[in-house]
Length: 139
Image 1 (spheres, helix red, strand yellow):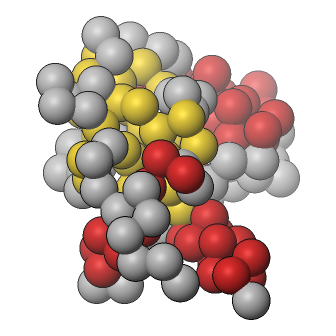
Image 2 (tube, helix red, strand yellow; image 1 turned 180 degrees about the vertical axis):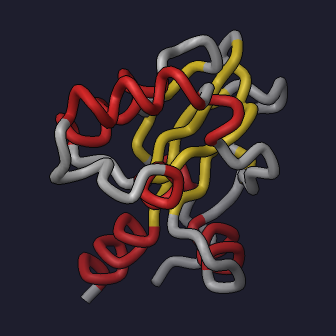
């Protein structure tokens, strides 16, 4: 593995995001339609949090496989994206390396790492799956 490989080479640039003013039901639908497991949350392009499909499941156990209209109504009436997201999101610099991402993700209990620029604007995301694919491609 090339330890100093820029993270830009494996991250997903311009990832889909959730926005703080968005309806929770719209965010849940993004997870369903796109098969995402994590969504960075932004406000004005700046990273302010991250939301996982597991976060939604903890709030509404029947969020997948239940009556979608009922689940969406419950989400929209009881939560906001800001109350559902993890505001203490760990991120890395766009100037970082694959090794930096490995170091962070191997020490924590989450599997997605938003990548930000010097102004805090979201530029990409790297996941543990991206790192596994990168490792696979090295051999």
